[in-house]
Image (cartoon, rainbow, N blue to C red; front, side, top):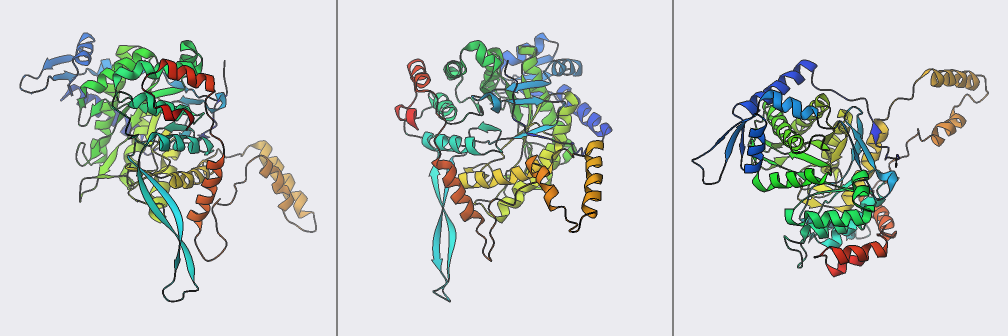
Length: 511
């Protein structure tokens, strides 16, 4: 039995809602699921709900088959109570496994989204128009379409980022040889061949799930070994907000649950368009959608490992695009963390997204705003946290390196206080000892705290002169990380995968 896990950061949760407010939101969500209920575009799901006591009627006047489902509160409560409160997410390296426990507010941070654009950065030298002797280096950026090579590079870099706890593929692969049919096997292989941490993604095509599972079983050491150490898991956005179950995604939920692997039931309504912009309405609706999704998983297979996935965003009111770097984003999502804790289901949440298009002060402001608050909330599994820019449209490896440093500081900041009777007694002895000395300085007594890891380091990319060199320093550090060898799979394992899993790009073997 493997029992080592990544440390994450154990926090004393910040709770925005009172217990009465939690109960009101819970009841409001149950009321929504009863009336008006949900619009279900998957017949199998509608039938399953009906078999367990839901009121189901077919909507006759729509072009697409649809069933209106009214879920009784008792059915939802009973099903959600059967979801496990504790889930292990495996990894190639045992020490990189995650233990996500709804009763323990231990925060893990990881990547996320599936951006189409990769943003490279390089420093270029510019000469002052006023004084040609004055030269400055300025970052310049180049966009590339996502590819398997770049996804492999992202996975390798993320393996080296000490504060990244799990990997959700941050980049869409768009190579000429990639099709809908082979998209899944290539994105999972590119990830698993370059990172030893937990790998999670959505499914593009249900038809290739068996091949993805075959690949994971070969790497994990067999079917049972994969279930004991699930090195991969899946995300399903089964709801199209507001309150509509999507046909093909529902079929993916059935397949993943039946396969016995962990699944995130994710919902991402937009306050102001596909959900109310008011906090109470937004949270009641997203909570209703997630509860219905969790209910579905438990009706398919009781005890199925599932995460409560909240990605609540707000609309910009000038163009109706997503607005992430705003106070409402934190309010919506902190409320959801509290609700997940109320239901004792591990919480998948979101942080580190903003509107900035390049690394800089805006991106740092927007990211710190959510990195800190969402970790404080006690969300167990925080995605989107590394490298995203331009909302979720762009992944920048330089930004991921900057985020790694910022999240490290957040983790240190939120550590449990080391204050107990032993610590207090030691401190009192130290004060007496120092005050009895000639120098009256505590400097030599800092050594013990440093060795215990209690003392944080200065900002890794600081500069000592009158010029901001954070980006230049971060690029140098990234180059060091990328010069290290990739943690590739054993060549024999790779050969077995290529023999048994069709559709893998030949060139991906060695990237």
